Length: 99
Image 1: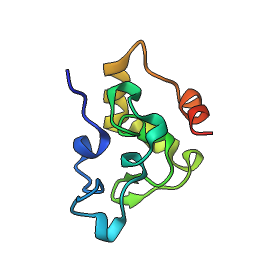
Image 2: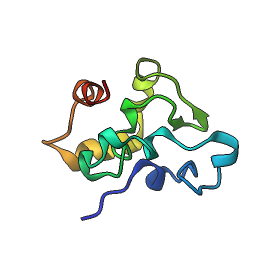
Image 3: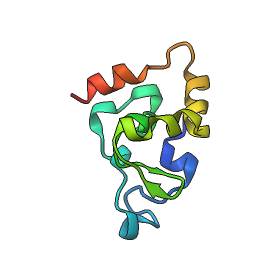
């Protein structure tokens, strides 16, 4: 079963060629190759909460530490966690992959 990436699920328009690239830029989740395949996603598309600069509630977010509390409440985060249980990768593991 195909899993949605965050930009597909949230329809943010920050993917390459998306409607909001000119005003908000391309989302780092669409380009982060080190997370490619995590939770069945493309690049960082199913691990966006571990990446700085993603879009949430219409605003570009900061670092992991600054945004994670919001991410935990996000419907996409909760969907991925449920879909991937019990193989959901913890944020510490994802952050380690980015170092």
